[in-house]
Amino acid sequence: MVKKIFAQTYLWILLLLLYSPIVIIVIYSFTEAKVLGNWTGFSTKLYSSLFTTGAHHSLMNALINTITIALLAATASTLLGSIAAIGIFNLKARSRKAVGFVNSIPILNGDIITGISLFLLFVSLGITQGYTTVVLAHITFCTPYVVLSVLPRLKQMNPNIYEAALDLGATPMQALWKVIIPEIRPGMISGFMLALTLSIDDFAVTVFTIGNQGLETLSTYIYADARKGGLTPELRPLSAIIFVVVLALLVVINYRAGKTKKKD
Image 1: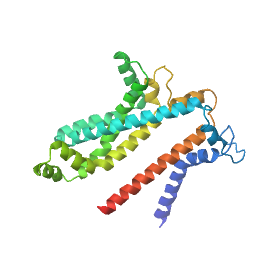
Image 2: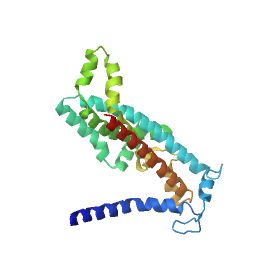
Image 3: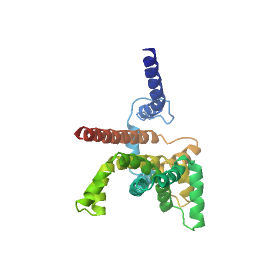
Image 4: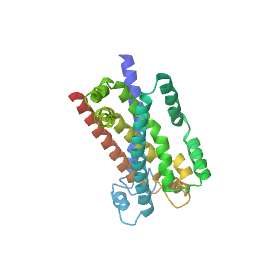
């Protein structure tokens, strides 16, 4: 009984530490105060100001850049990571371990090292840094996470169903599309969501590959804004909206995954 109470107390304290900063941002997004922590009365002015045409043009541009880069990087890394996971799964045991170890290096490696490495690579190849280099950099560090998301689904899959599809006359491409892809789709969706979140959240890699052409993402905008001596108040409602959207997506995905398990 004592252990159970201690475990529940620990869990609630951990959840409080994790989510209290987000709750504070959401609460103070409904007040006009410029400084976080100063409540001046309930108001939705920051939300209306956020979407007012031309009011925060640079902030909205940074948000659009962040979302488009994240979508492109997540889509490309999901495709590359899924194909790579299928290839790794079909290797011999020793080769699979070796390639899996190599795949883990970018994940364990520090973001700042990855950013510097990609910066030096683009410079040595003479590639002008900007939108394209940021997308390529995000694909690079997101793909290993997709591989790790898809591999467990391949291990859970019955290996005989692919062979059965080939025996019944399906081509390898048809068997891949109609047998393997449906089996690993939950892992692909999880990998896509993880890559999307990592891309939106990234700063270290982005700041080394963004160049000096005026391109800004949300992370670099917040960094530059903080260096000026304070954060734009409209960042509070924007953060609250992003949190609610991500939370809604996770609820929908988990709900659909639960329904699929019940059908199985």
